[in-house]
Image (cartoon, rainbow, N blue to C red; front, side, top):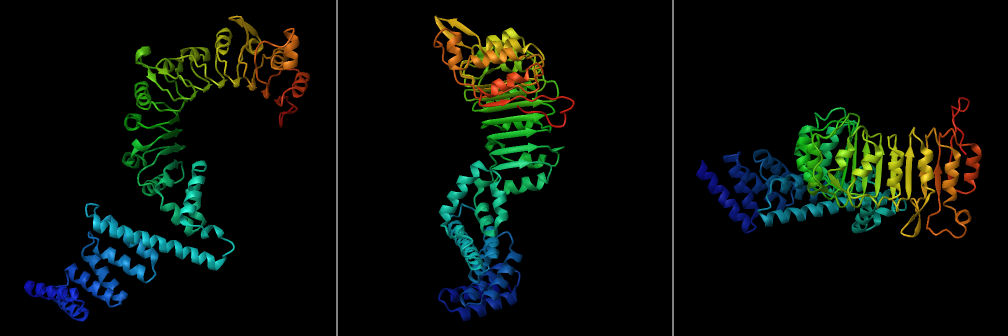
Length: 510
């Protein structure tokens, strides 16, 4: 039987090559009757039906090829062509996808042929959607009349400023969905929260082709179900990682991260100091670092010698929150480009932390110290070195803030020149300072006013300074209301909120 089948099949192939389709069809029919388990006979007969213009019969045989040889591309590729020919573009798109999955790039000619067919199908789908929309309301959707290349440029312009735009665009129309799903780079930003994190992560990994570059995981009670997917993710591509309110096995995750420019960890517990040090050392391109925890976090060993400290030359934003021994951490780092520093409720004194920074952060333009302990004399000495500071926030401090505020209006003589502490200050916030009075605030504001400063110095002041634009002194009970009125006449934006029992429902803004 095998020899008879082979003879019938050989005759059918020979007849097909000379375009004798009727004879070829008879030979393949005979071969299938002899042995209906060989996919080649069905595939060849499908080719005959395709040539004879009988697509339904060809699709039936192609389906049989898929049934007998699902691991091969033959049945899927022919089905894609046939569905395309009869105008069923969605089915054609699915079939060509399955065909490409079964063709290796090691066979370049066949692979290129299928890729061309895929592109043709995608173009047909786009044109079909455009025609449908044009028929419904041609004046309503002018966007879809734009060339495909121009639409891509529009999307490329919007997505950097709105990372969630691709998901929204998919809901607008099937036309937009085709656009967004065809570009893996649109799906590189992934946010996982309590709402269906596993399903979302699976879809984004597929759509981005496992090239997530920005990952944010927040408010997930457990990462147990995500662990298998995280282990499959190519974390080496991640350049921005934000982890909030959950615990991560950093010993597994940290060694895979090498391209970070943003690292935000706000968790119940931070990585072990040795793991964190190794993580920072492997990501010297960091530009933003945020560390926050609710539990006490201390270094396990003495400070690393300065010769072995970690250099982060691009770090401009540093934010430390919670009971962290940040003075010890900062002794291990060198951050010469630091511009923004935020300290919130840290375990170490704020002045100790800033003194531990190598080198002295003279490039700082923004400093925020909230609910931190510090020694007044030391913090003043540090502030005097921050000549580029433009915005300062020192709040929730129960000590003597009068001396700190007075320091901003002091004129020092160094190297024969008059120098004002932080001369470029534009915005200040001294809120929640129960001991702060109105006198230091008035003197501070006067030192930043050209007409008054000249009178104070007996002529034009010898120092340069910026005009104050904003001052906030909310919940400072010792500041007289008349001070607030005086400030409003001289500073562009003033916030002075008094809270009494009678006004507890809605404070009084001045």
